[in-house]
Each structure stands twice: as C-alpha cells, then as structure tokens.
Image 1 (cartoon, one colour):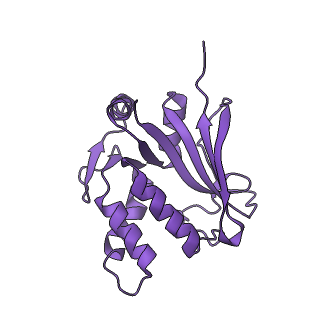
Image 2 (image 1 turned 180 degrees about the vertical axis):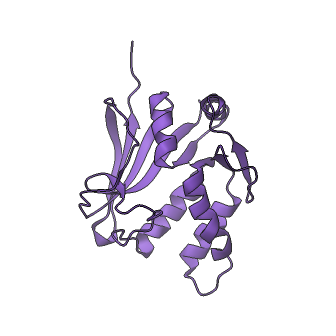
Length: 196
C-alpha cells in the first residue's frame, strides 16, 4: 500500500490559515496550549516523512533546530524541535539550492508533482504536507489523500484560505475527530477519489 499525503494545518472556523500577510503560521488567533502541542508532537513523530513548500520550511528552520537545545523552552517544544529536525523532509522549491536537517530539495517545475507521486508510491505510512500552495497542487493532481485540520474557535473574515485558488469540489469523508484545550477541534478527512 502506498504512502498517504496528509495536509496538516491550523485553521480558523472559516478555513483561513493566515489573517494578515506574513503571519507565518503564528497569528495571535491561534490557541496552542501544552495539550494540543503534545498532540502535534505525537502525530509528527508518527509521520514517515514531511514535504514542505519553501515558505513553511523557512518558518520551521528558523526556530525548531535551535529550539531542541533551548533550556528556556518547555520540554514539549524542545521535543518538537528534535522531531522536526530529525524527520526526513522534502523541500519543494524553485529557488532554494541547499537545505539542512535531513532535507532534500526538489524543484517546483512540472516534474515536481511526478517526483512527489513517486515518493508517495515508494513510501509507507503518512507523509505530512506543509503549505497551501503545495497542498493545492497535490489536490489538483489527485495525490492528496487526507486533511488533518486543527480548527481554532475564531472567525477571521479575511486572510489566506486553506487552499490557494482551488476551483472545483472535492468530496471528503470524516475519519477522525476530537477536541482539545481552548476549544480547538480536530477533524481528519479522507479525500474521496474521483471515479470516471
């Protein structure tokens, strides 16, 4: 059985991932406490690997490698730093030529989707997807398998959506749900395969 691409994202109730440009995944509307972060850690640890677009990757590399050794941070943040740094990763970028922390780079040209399809076919287990642009391309190519959404109790009204300009319906099946501190809920959906 091939691997599964799982788009994992924090969202508002109206499915925005950023309220202001450049929030970089850290808006003050997010309600991430210890219990929720420990859930993030457990799910990240269970991933076979991660694929990330350049923006998400650069946000992560600025903080998490150093966080794993920062004794001023709580243990669950240091733990996530260790998980992210050591986990095999693929960076999808047309501009980056080098990356550290167990990361290989593939370009953003037409061959990137083919390479990602091969990665999925040759993998086993869940492959975390980070980045709206990347997730949108995978959805359009019929390669996105699941959505893992952590919904925060806020309506943002404006901002970047969960997908970048996806223009067609995609049917989903709810396969898991849960709730965490601060009113955050988890919904995990399988993307239904289109039949001819």
